[in-house]
Length: 339
Image 1 (cartoon, rainbow, N blue to C red):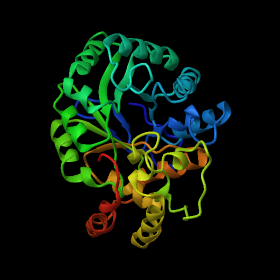
Image 2: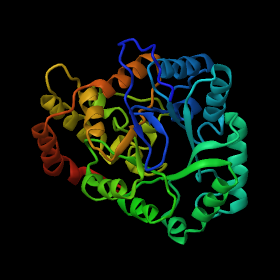
Image 3: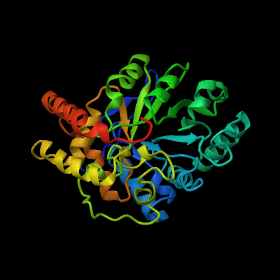
Image 4: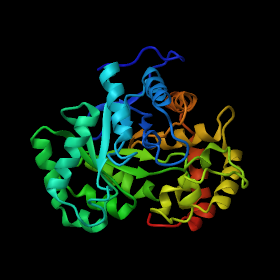
């Protein structure tokens, strides 16, 4: 197994196995939604290359993207980087949110076409991990889509399959499916419902957990104030109340003003020498069911900061308990959307 040695802090990134019989990946991965340029400031090709390069040189060897991020742009940028650099990275992509299938027009043909297009953009004969992309619960319950995935796996077009979900209920349905390798979930200090039901069940079944939105759209960076403004095209501006898609994908479902106040309160919990962002990432990694955390990054600097969480000391049991109490007392009641 290749481990990257040229890391600035001279420590290798720790790795975990993605589910039973899965591959080893870095504890901190890279979410690549932002490379599609759908929301907020568009990242140009040079900036994207710098972000991907910095990720690899800091020991990150797991990239998460989707066919719909920038209508294939994110996959294309990753594919070109992969082809030119020959970097030893695992790439996960997704299917299920493009206009031709969502919300109720899923077919094996559409899945095949999407996978073939992704393989071409990523320069990969076999996709390391293909995930269902927050598809409607009705489709998950039908189960046919999982049979199509199993067929693609047998044919060698995908190595593993998983599902990105928006609620505990959706996750539990997916865990009943034979051969599922991973679940991708929203999980952070602001969204702890998964801790005692979904995560232990996934761990018991040998299914890996990929955590998206670890920073609750930046709230847990601790850098926002109630006056912070976002670009017109940024989902943190136009999806605050779930106008465009599931409200939980923006600020973890919290109203922005309340989220800022709660973040300020959380700063008082931080151990000495740990920022709120560092504590937030470490909190996720301190749950054994979690395989990897995939924060996005709009700059090389953010990649470096995020990668350091793997080598931070674990939080104390006392602090973990206090953060859970804080969630139950102050946070849970304010969360909106399916969960």
